[in-house]
Image (cartoon, rainbow, N blue to C red; front, top):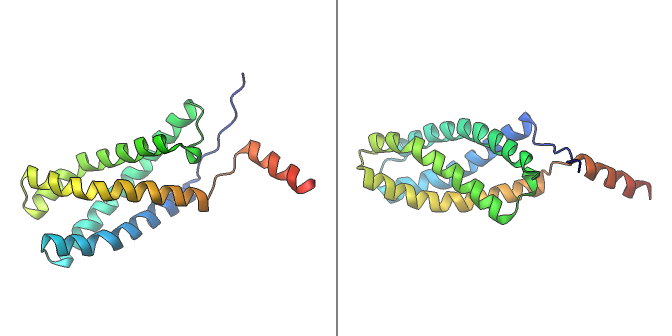
Amino acid sequence: MEQKKIVVRSGWDRARYVVSFEILLLMCLAPTAALLLEREALDIGVLAVILSIKAMIINVIYNYFYDRFDIRRGVVPTGRTTRQRLIHALGFEGTLTLTSLPLVMWWLDMSVLEALMMDAAMMAFIVIYTYVFTLVYDKLFPVIQPYQEEIIEGAQMG
């Protein structure tokens, strides 16, 4: 049985996704974190921007390899099921946690436990945010697959 060719997002599309994702997340999290942690907004804002830049770099790498993993299994990345989307979001956030924790501990002068507790609260929000943002993004900017183009062309002719 021949496997259908699966088309993934372009570099431009991935850049649009990452930048819009991070800007909206920064607008939500930075002021809230400054308030809850009773820290200067500028201090939290600078940390948030650093973490955001790191997240953008990891996002591109993580999603590149995750898309390839999906394609090998015959899954269209923009057509992931709820379960597949949750696994994707949890894996991404786990990767971010492992790479962010040392910086957060140093920057905010926190113990490992304090940083983990703060990260757990933020991750709970961000996993839901990632799931919803990606679902909405996939609906607003779908990647048309070659077999879908044939269906669209057929519908336009008929």
